Every structure is written in structure tokens, then in C-alpha cells.
Length: 186
Image (cartoon, rainbow, N blue to C red):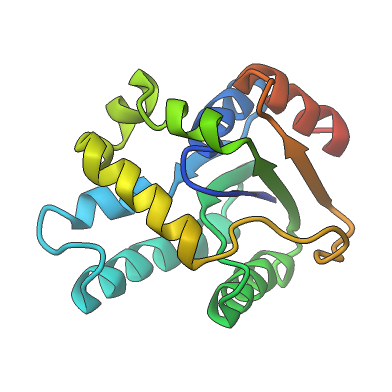
């Protein structure tokens, strides 16, 4: 079992890279908006109810996948490095898979701000993430989150063996996925 955690700031290309990686491996993609957008029909993600339901759905999926015969899972999310909770979340999720014999791969994406602003409006993003279709709200959320939180790691901060940081400003999603596949021999 492989768990590939793809993380980075909003609109860096996590889902799109995950889609491309799923095409060239046997990994299944579980991008973070699959649960956020499901729950948003009932509760906004910013509410306690919304966060609780999103976390419950994710945890149940992780539990089942971690003990299944699937080749592996790609999960995408925004890691806020200034929040201890996010560090603990990654540790807890990693432990779940590793305790069942799985291997966890950490893939951090970073891209220039202007590139991310452009990607925030991409047709693929808007097709798969309904909550991002309000472009003014989405761009404001991207900007405000960047001002409030540190969304990329410092050099040397992540000390895991299976870690890769890619600046994909000038790379296509397919090129980025190929780098991941080759680095981790998937």
C-alpha cells in the first residue's frame, strides 16, 4: 500500500498533478475537495459541523483504503506549516498507513504566486471543485490564506526519507507526475 500525500498552497496544481499521477500508476486519487464539496451541500466547510463531517468522511476512507488490497492512494491537501494541528494530522495519517505495512510519500508543490492566480481559474479546477467557481471568493481566499499561513516548508524542515519538493511553476502536470513516479519508482 502506498500513500502519496501531495500538498502545497491553493491552486499550485495538486489535484491536476494527482490526476496525471493516477493515469500513469495504479494509484487512486482522493483530492481534498471530494469531501469538502460533498459536505458543502449541507454545511460550509468553515463551520464546526462542516469540518467534523469532512474529517469523518476522510478518516473512514483512509481506514478502509489502508487495509485494502489497493495499490495505493493519492491524497491532496493544503498543509499550513505554522499550525501544529496540521503537522499532527500528517503524522497521524502517515502512522495509519505505516502501521499496516504501507509506505508514505510526501510530495510538496510550490509555484510562483502569479502562476497560482492563473491556475485558480483553470477549467479543470473549476470542473472538479464547485466551491472554487466563485472566482472572486476563491482568489480572495487564496490571497488571505497566503497572508495568514505559511503554505510551503523551509528547506530541510521535512526530514522524511520519502520526501520530494518540486517547483512546478514551469512544469506541466504530466511532467510533474512523471518526476514523482520516477523518483519513487511507482
